[in-house]
Amino acid sequence: MPATDDLDLRAHIVAAGIFAYRAADFHEVGPAEVAVHADITVEEFRRVYPVWELFVVAVIDRWNNAQRAALRSIAEQDGAVAYVRARLETGLGDPALVRLRLALLSAASNPSHAAAGWFRKQYTTSFEDLTFALARDVIAGRESSGSSARHGAEQLLALYEGLQLQSLLRDDVDLLPGFDRAVARMRVGWGAVQQV
Picture 1 (cartoon, rainbow, N blue to C red):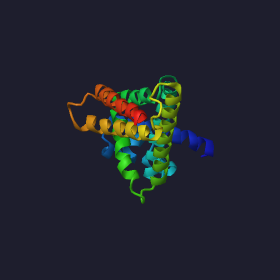
Picture 2 (picture 1 turned 60 degrees about the vertical axis):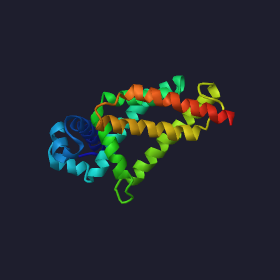
Picture 3 (picture 1 turned 90 degrees about the vertical axis):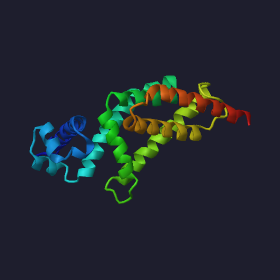
Picture 4 (picture 1 turned 135 degrees about the vertical axis):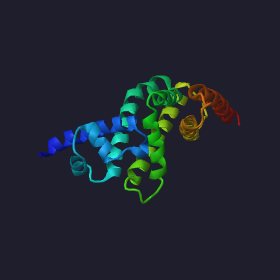
């Protein structure tokens, strides 16, 4: 099969993988389940994705990049907080892929994981993007002058991940109002930093 056909097949398999993760729990998805959704054989799946972890990277990469691209204008127009809130809202509509991402955070912390380097780089890039967006917000007057963009990004990222995890494990979590309350308290702290 020519290389371009393999590229098309990989893209098709990744799309099928997204559907497979939406249809079943993270731990229940393997090559056989993805092959069913892709309407291919398991052997064909393994030929183009011989390392399972790299297939999972491709799935999360497509989902994450599509979400970031779709919401980038929110960060530019309305700020970093609105962007993170929009990501949370998007996750409410796609809880299976949120579960996949949270499961992979643990795997990525293991240096021996096949895709640990990629995950760490993506995580660092997301953090840097958020830091840059907050710095722009301070310049634009959307956030308190004197606020530390880096510290704010740490807090927003922790809030994003923590609330998502809680919403998956607790039935009484109201994700978006919880985010709004926490951000209101954080902004008081950001403003207090300026006065010190």
